[in-house]
Image (cartoon, rainbow, N blue to C red):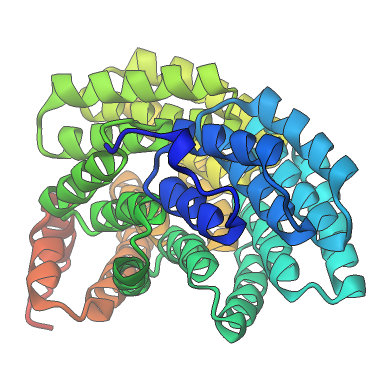
Length: 429
């Protein structure tokens, strides 16, 4: 990394100095960005618009450094110093993001909705787009994917009209994540690849790391674990070796999928530790679920059961439907592993009902496949119905994959091969 030299900053040319701040921030050098921002605020004659830009970089850098309490303090200071609605809206949007990380979702909703109302009233289009994106992330977190999609499309359209490439890329990252969460895995890959191409012209390493992390997760859903690991290793390199809880979680999932169990578990444990230290409830619960999946794959049923109870308690308290769905699915698998078929059948059915609300295709087909095996001894007819549903979902995912090499990887995954072989389907369908 280049060495920071504050005295070389040309304070007589604030716009040029702001360019240095922007380049430092998007090079994922958060501590340097904080130093540059505070130096400029203390020593430069700045316009109101320039002050607002510096505050935004300051808060986001602190958030990336997991200095959440300090970031909140800067949000308060920004609102006090803001000369107009742009700054006030920006502080509300950043506050909403910080509240979300803490799991204080009511406060996050309140801040984001205030920001939307103020932005609509003042006509600040760029700030309205950011407020809509933040509100969409909250809808996404609670499983309301339809509302999230509507808001994200509106936000992206505004940012495209404004030609704000940096925020377009950040919004596309959220859209890509939403796409793979709702079962549109290859569509997510296409969106994320397109966003990655935009970062090449802007040298935006920070969003590139986010995009690589999310793209790797989409590859995981299609069982392309080598590709997933490559993406997550690139994300880590782009961040100069400084990891995050979500990146550690994904590295753990990759390595477990590649049967490097000890390394994978170490990353998952580190992800949990990081998320808890940061007070980031969402990341903690997703890291916990990934740990549960790993424990079940390794036959550690008792450990998985204890973690699943904790996951469901917190997810229900926060109203996080996707995580409740994951927790129910894990409980069903645990009941099945413990020989309680009746309880497993009940829980798999509950899982399907919850997953249908959010459209999480992978969990739906896996639950139906499990139900087919459970009910087969008593009713081959009902088992056939469950099996057919599972197969049709998998075939629809397969048909959506437009890259032949990736389609082959997906179809050759052991769980997919077994399902389609049992169904008597030809892979060339």
